[in-house]
Image (cartoon, rainbow, N blue to C red; front, side, top):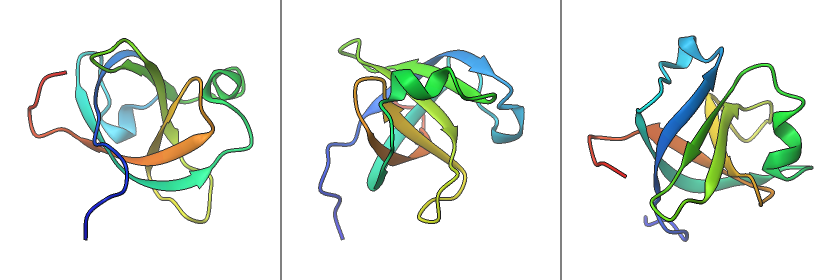
Length: 97
């Protein structure tokens, strides 16, 4: 089964309390399938989160990674700051951004 959205690699630029998820500055993560539509855009969620990471893709688009609090997701999700859509996210296999 293939995913309906483009796979994107992001490089982490900022980390706040995500040590249990092994997120570190400079690490590369890859998006997966669409999971759910959040109630708010990513930029609005950052102010409410205690644990998150900031990341950028090769075009400069900014994202937030955070622990999901949703029945359709476990672990971390990724959401663009200018979007309400949340996707799966996985540590990359070494592909640079």
